[in-house]
Image: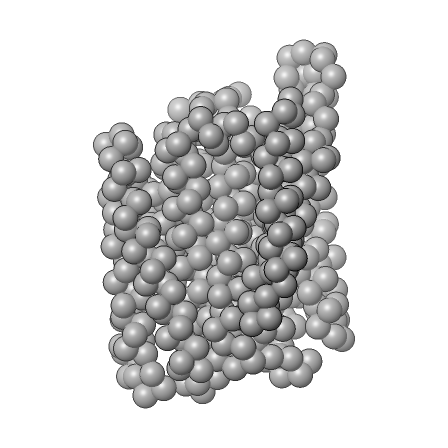
Amino acid sequence: MLGSSLNPINSSIIATTLIAIGHTFHAGAASTIWLVSALYLASAIGQPTMGRLAGLIGPRRVFLAGLALVGIGGALGTVATNLPTLVAARVILGVGTSAGYPTAMIIVRRWAAEHEPARTGGTLGALAIAAQVTSALGLPLGGLLAAAAGWRITFFVNVPLVVIGILMTLTWVPRDLPRAERTGDSTPPPRLDTPGMVLFSGTIASLLLFLNDLHHPRWWLCALVVVLLVALVLWERRADDPFVDVRMLSRNKQLSATYLRVCLTFLLNYCILYGLTQWLQETRGLSAIGVGLLILPMSVFAALISFPFARHDLARSALYCTAAASVIGPAGLLLFTSTTPIWVLVLITMVFGVISGLGVIGNQAALYQQALAEAVGVAAGLMRTFTYLGAVLSSSLISLSFGDRATDSGLHTITFALLGLGAVLLAITPSGARHLKAS
């Protein structure tokens, strides 16, 4: 649970420190947002890669290697003297934290198969809620830590967490068995789909570079995205063990719709996490700790509302509530100006707690119903990739709307975009939700 929480907490803990980091290195919002994009680009590629490596050489080994990378990234960020070094630290953190969720899934499933198979669902639900809680608490925690000791502490906090994680893993997680004993056969292990990984990485990186500077669009990058995407699809359709199983996605329309909902949900969520927090600091003049305290009710509400829906398997209701909140929340943002009362800001942001809380629960439950039993691990990894894609798109929208400063007009530009995205999410949710099993 600790390992699978490192990625979401690193995703959110930096949100309230972007302004301070920009002041330290004399960089604007368009530059510091790369601290967000870098981690999600690395994670989007790293999650399925770490999952594949865990299947080949064992989840415990990959988990420990990932923790070591997190420690290196945290230490590098603590002593960074310029923004490029800090971005490099975030890339290392993205790769290292990517090991947490897929290896945790494999470790828990292995334990459940040997001891109590009936408890697998509850345990996986606990993993999801743990990640959700740490993601929600990351933002106010980042504000408190930054106020107490400066923004560098948000990187250093990874070091003690890594030490604790390694000690617990070495103490409690059984050693990886040889592959023949794990799988029951002696056939050669599947090889990594290196061409697929390269094409996937190139597609995502090219898309991010294109979207990051829409003020001066580089259309050759857009063309490159199309070429790489076509090449990726053609290659993966022919691959025996593809990095991205496009054949599975084309056959399973409901699962593909779930991935689209996940992308839209997290695009909405992270526009608030990163865009609104910058506006609160630069336009409202709140301190990092003030922003953290203002967002805290949303974070707590997101965590609390997740428990009853997860416990009673209310996937359909969770998706409907998420879709409704995706329109109500952005509509409320239209009220935000530099003079809006604090209680109004708190009330409207709590609506986005529904999106971040129930969006995870509803879409994860949908995925486990829609994916084939033997492909649940691959399907779950792809869901995380679409999560990161939504986050990367949100950072691009923020950069385009704010430029070098988060203003009222920039926030309203983001708001109108979110209204359109919320309308799309509201339109596509009923067709997907009605196919889910009732609790």
